[in-house]
Image 1 (spheres, one colour):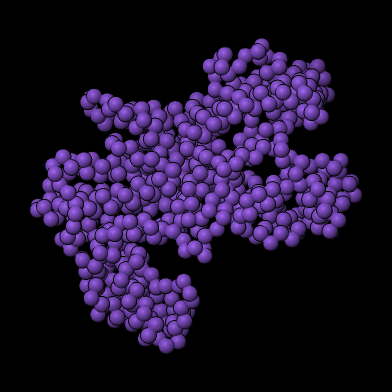
Image 2 (spheres, one colour; image 1 turned 180 degrees about the vertical axis):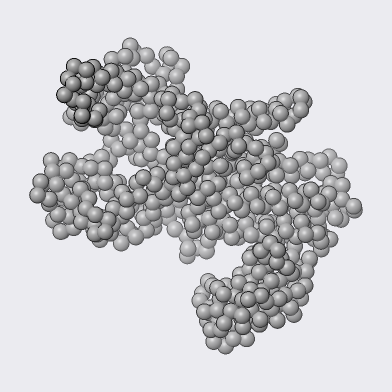
Length: 597
């Protein structure tokens, strides 16, 4: 919060303590007074004592003395190194919601703190549609990119699609054998689902052949399915198809390109529905050989070593040893990641790179970053893995095409229908609105994203579609409804000819009015804190608390039917301020607001 009394206090304290040395960019700040304490704001002197070369209670006592004499302050008292301050009404509103554009503009970093950041997320495979895990990944990635851009970082979102390998060949082989010339167009099936169905058919055929193999050769009982893969006819055929693809066989490559196009068409529809956009999409088919030359250079420089069996390894100390080239000279996954990381660094010249990848890959990224550090890349210290936990459903699955994975498109449809039903229930039999489908999509997708962002990314979470759509509680629709309610207030005000031109803020004296204004004023801190932590849940929790503050105000304070026109105008202005801040926060999380709910 940018409060004039705190700015004056800082100057006065510097004068009162000659030994004070405030580093450039360091300022005294205030935060909301904790519940149960007397006051509007609190100044934490523990954070500043090292700059003033004195004890917290001494600094707090002096601060309380100075603030008590400030023209904007009603009362100030020191409590164990803290100063609790009650502001005069006119000053409180002047320094908060009287200038909403200033609040919105304040939620940015100073120019010297802004960075150019590449964020890689999504990373689907082209052998099946995206699932609930991808939905969490996409939501985390797109919202983090939006948040960082909101505070004025230069953000470059990219995707790396796994479009090659044995798993891709499985879908291709199944299509050759069972497709009979069908296409997504001829069947009316979305492209990624169409290809995914053949991946399922392949696995079904493979299971049958493994079962037959075990029955025919009982001595294989101790072998797992992976060991038996190449002993089956269909497993060997898929491996041969991969060999042909890598050799550039025209027929194989043509089929691969055609099926990839089908999948990408499907992916694009999923991305469009979520609002996902990338500056660039990298394909593993173009990057899988990257890194081999870099590893060879590292071997010459002594960064890597040769193992007795001929494999190239990296000794990473406490992290262990990592193979970076197999004994036959072929790449492993981290080899490609080394090359792709350098490719992004060279192409975009970022100050930092971020990967949104599940927490099962924590060790992988620790090793990747350590390898790049060992290779002498100074920028390797600015690489960040945003690890996230699994997301589950209470039922274990919804409508899934593979029986175990929750399909993203099915989930979106489910959320849309749940939102539509919730909207119809609230109409109590009234005529459905003309924009029902659009409204249901905004509410349903907003509820999904909000719930996936509500928890720290590292949390393994349970996603309950029904609970996420409740209009009361810690949900996206709860915040959206606060905005929609204010939109309704604004429409009714316009119908009655009520305008807001010069609100007399000093007339707003209730605790609920003051609390809402103060909550609005802390929006910039929430934005910057969330961006610094790379954690959208910080912003989600801010929006929930601010929406709750609005609803407490709405219950206790009449706006449209206020006791006089001047109070009505001030309360309407307060409503609109809260709406604009909540809407901006939701937009930062890539969540829309329907005009009505």
